[in-house]
Amino acid sequence: MSTPSLDGLRPDPALKGVCRILAEGGTKRLMRDLRLALQIDAPLEISVVKQRLGQRAVLRVRSVEEDPPAVWFVKLQRRRVQPDRIAQLRSIAEIGERAEVRIPRPVALLPRYRATILTPVSGDRILSGAEPPRVLQEVGEAIARLHRLLPALGPLRREGFEGSRVDRSGSLIDALRPDLRDRFDAAAARWWANRPRGPRSNDAVLSLHGDFYPAQVLVAEETATGRGRVGLLDWDEVCRGDPERDIGNFDAHLILEEVRTKSVDQRTAPVDAASLEPLAAEGAE
Image 1 (cartoon, rainbow, N blue to C red):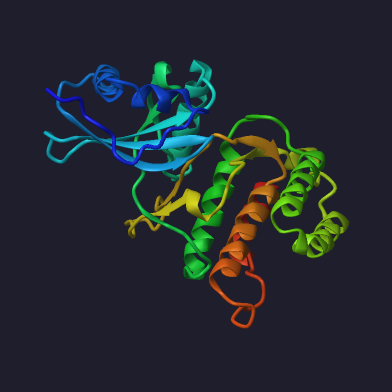
Image 2: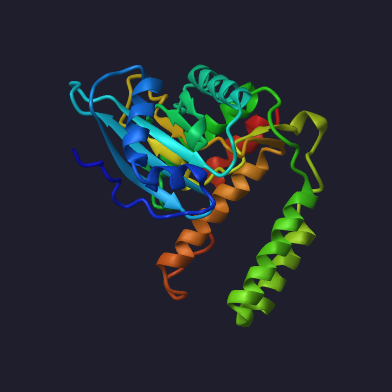
């Protein structure tokens, strides 16, 4: 009997789980470990959803004999996932239910692969600013509800952290596109002059998603109540800070997507995040 392979999974020395899967007999061992963790005997079908070399890989697992098929996602990471992290993710998912926001729930750990098995969240991704304002309004209200309900989680992010990321971006510009350095410096100077001077008050220090941008958002079909359509993925960067940090990150990605897809002549005014303002207004109350 031949050993199954996992097409599309690329070698990555930074991810121990990927190395173990790609080793001789690794996929067969993974199948066995998944059945044990999920407590099922049915055959499984595994495919690669995405892989970011040096950071993470996501696999889709499907139980082929069930009707409808059960589906899970397996997220492989560089660092070990601690049991208390699983408890935290379960808590976030439970609070998501109260906030009527759909969040992946961890099912089990796969320590051998530094991986977490997660339940799926359905819906279509938001990939640009072309969605109707009502959709962005729903997204803003959803993240605002989470800001209000989540307990204090993760490290506190203040302006020093943001400044270090700007400096790192400048180094990348130097290495990849030195011709853009002057434009980058001008933009960075404007940001520094207008940056928030920390949270507006101690009450404004809330738990944030930490990596909130359009590709992390899924919007499902209409529901009877008009709520519960929004799903938010990937809570690995959860932190504490001013809720405007989440808004700014989301808005910056919308602008970046517009830059990537339009010429300078086609560009409109910078994408306005007004539809997400409930996030800042409600989160700071």
